[in-house]
Image 1: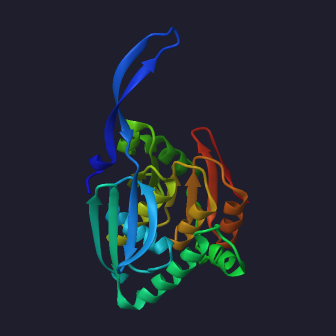
Image 2 (image 1 turned 30 degrees about the vertical axis):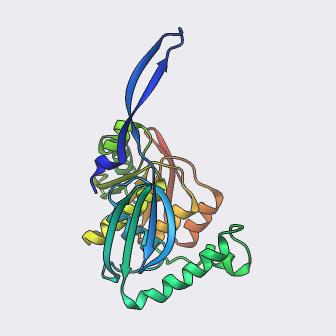
Image 3 (image 1 turned 135 degrees about the vertical axis):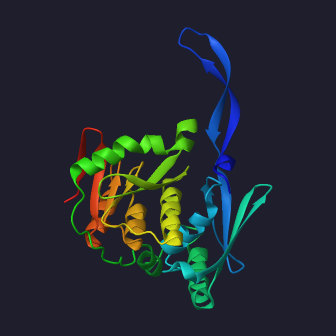
Length: 261
């Protein structure tokens, strides 16, 4: 689906400090429900940008630990409907039992959030250990930060969209995905990499958001050696990064950044 489907125009009135009013027309980021189905089973509804939905299918599936490899997704179909989009994903037969198990947990979580020992264990499952390797040079991270805004056409038009970028060791931005949701943007990036057979090659992920523990987990599951975010982390995000040996760099700004110990 084209990126244009995720941006539309809306009328506004601009009110200036002196009381002057102007009628204007402005681009806004469209946020739409995306209903995800696996092999005919309803699984989740995300609020997301209706662009790069096939990448979202692959990245979300890996983040949910339903697949490990691209070949385990047999087919993806995105259907626009009156109130949003339906993303129908067909998994290979050997992955269907995982879907049924996760659906069972989601049903038990739906009424009161995460409750009970079994669900707590599901929420904080062990993460694979990453291989952080050699740290990217500070100059490479600052170079990527400088270049990120020029690689965000949707955010440039709307000012309301997050980005997730694959950056090389030299800081060059190799691939970017955008979405109104920071989690969705990272899923789309990881899905695009999975579909395209791309790896991190000693590079890093740069996210235009705060760092929640879910983003750390997505990075670890994608084998990302270094995660860089422009805003602050939660305590659990730092803890989970340490458990997975993931190099975590936060509050990355043009003049400074923090490396989690």
